Length: 230
Image: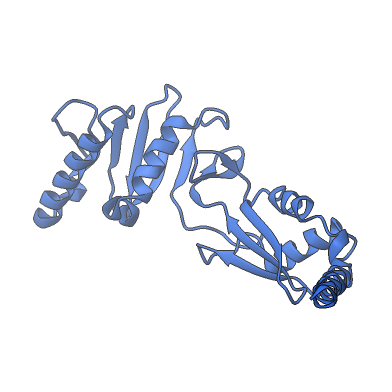
């Protein structure tokens, strides 16, 4: 019995040592969530190589997975990264990208991501999101983010809104696809009510074919839609 137990311990130790010394194969990269690749498979592999001098043929016991994850998360397009080793020595990287919901186009160009934060443009892919114009500061995106998030989560707005404009006095406006008028939201208070009023106005005037009669639709005031004629 003692001999058998010793043999089991020896085989386990031998197998563990062989596993630790097993060389790592080429990394496999998997993107989680949105299909649009703001960062490429090649860019992820390059980050892994840069931060470990080439991961292929590195013994498993010398690989620091936390360092590799942190290296990947240093890429401004990456929201989350998980790096792990399979039993056969394959290095796996699962990547969740940041999601842009609006694109600022002023004297600077960048995205606003799904958490309301600055996100640089990607050289690999251009997102189809509403433009943001006017007077915009990177560290003061809260109101624009609230409107952009509302657009992202509302099928009507996602289909029709092409631009968010912020004036010098921080008043917010929307431009709709194939509509000659601008929509004045004002601030973001009572935003849901304002959007419901916009939808009611849109459906009524779509039916009556009277969009061309107006230059501005003002939603600033409670339970009112004030229309300025052309």
